[in-house]
Amino acid sequence: MADNHGNTPAAWTAVAVALLGFVVGGIALMLSPVNMTLFWVGVALGLVAFPLFLILSKLGFHTEHH
Image 1 (cartoon, rainbow, N blue to C red):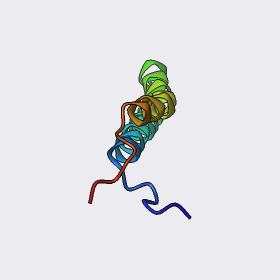
Image 2 (cartoon, helix red, strand yellow):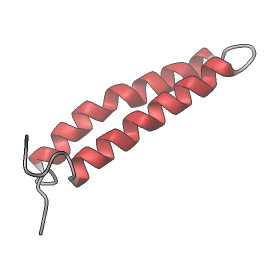
Image 3 (cartoon, rainbow, N blue to C red):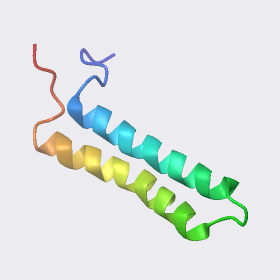
Image 4 (tube, one colour):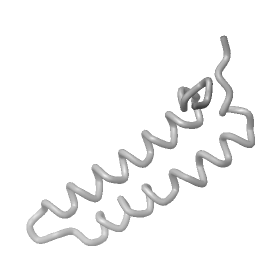
């Protein structure tokens, strides 16, 4: 297991964006009628999370400072 175990700004930011995407998509599916535009916004946010993590990692935000 990695020493930092994902406790880095890059990891936390990516998880927060992905969680926001799931919440937005879930809310869109609960509306009556279902709001497909809002659903796809949630999907897009979820998909942006991984590239965001990779970019932040390359910028040096995937290290834990002690």
